[in-house]
Amino acid sequence: MLIMNFRRGRSREEPEINFIPLIDVLLVILIFLMVTTTYSKFSEMKINLPSAQGEVVQQKTTEINVAVSA
Image (cartoon, rainbow, N blue to C red; front, side, top):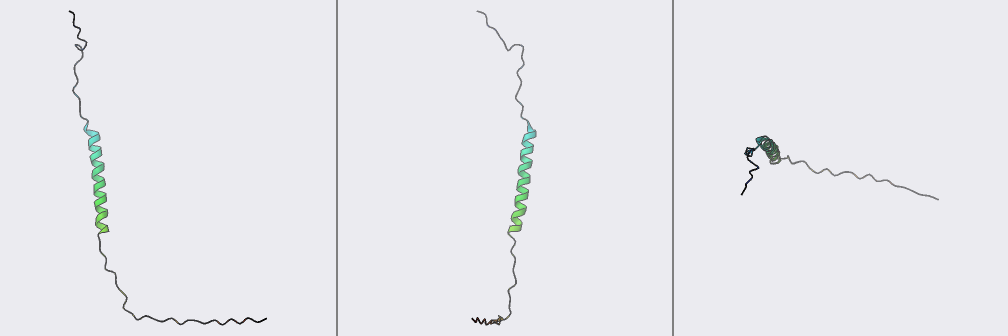
């Protein structure tokens, strides 16, 4: 019985993990989180607006009389 070994000449390569795309994705996520937390601080600001304390002024109504003749 003859057994042929076709993989005899090839060396088996170990799979590699490429960290460059992983670092790129983590940097994008980090930038996104930094920007969104900055905006959330500004949205939580509470502003006390002043209120008016004057008397209500009554406006004079101007009357206009229109006369129409033949």
